[in-house]
Image (cartoon, rainbow, N blue to C red; front, side, top):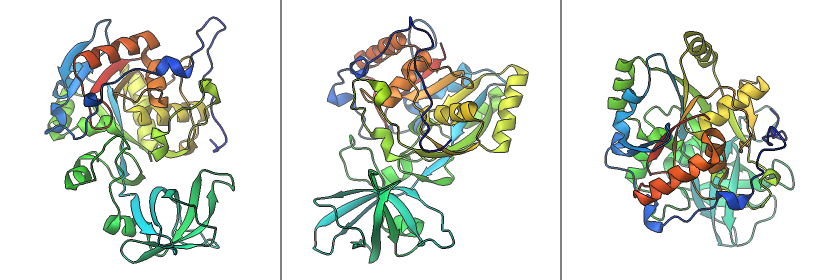
Length: 362
């Protein structure tokens, strides 16, 4: 899929309801936003929303809720310490949030990255910026084109090494504390192995070794995809007409081994259980395009026809977010609303460090 493609998720028939941005708004008390993870990963709460009435569970119950032969698919992306601080030649402070590290190519400036830039006044192209740790970043222009919202920069040495030594964990904007050693450990899944994400695939944060052992004993099969989650996952939808929203682009890959595991799951009559919305977007992008590796801008809203995923484990998402729209498309809008109201009433913890749900596709 090219970066300009955005698969249609328009209603499948003329009688289906047309949703607007206001439909996905809800009031969330501030104390429901989790600022820190639970003391034990699998001790977080799990709202079982597969039936007509919600059932309150603990995440450690998950193996018993799945069936032998089900395929659980994780996103194995690794969160990089993508937030870098520095200053302009004039002394003004700046912050970079690395969205993507570009591969070094012959004829290209090495160590190129794509980043968000927070600064009082944007510097002109060609400016050399000073970063913490004595490193530098030269501004090459906008990305992906001259009107792009992101910036293309060339760092003075290997970007991954700079971030590892001097970067900060890119915590979401609704987490108000500065990153700590706890965040470096807990804002990362236990199976993260492909560095490149600017945000965690948060539904997978609940898994620990005890749960993984329980899944294995239950006969649940596991597989991995990679989607490097971008900071754009927190980008709010600003248009009342949600179909006018343009999704950010993210790189994904589905290995031959995972594609084989999916085929084997179907052959034995198992169910494909996606861990997180990023896994859903990866699998459904591949199903629509047949492309196992590339960029996706897939935007899933009510009316979307799912081709791969049968069940979903997902955290509770921001009002008016594309992720909430995806969940509504998957489990049904009214069902989603009822589950969210139950979660608010029962004091579930919301967003990245919060609790989660188990859902079936409608």
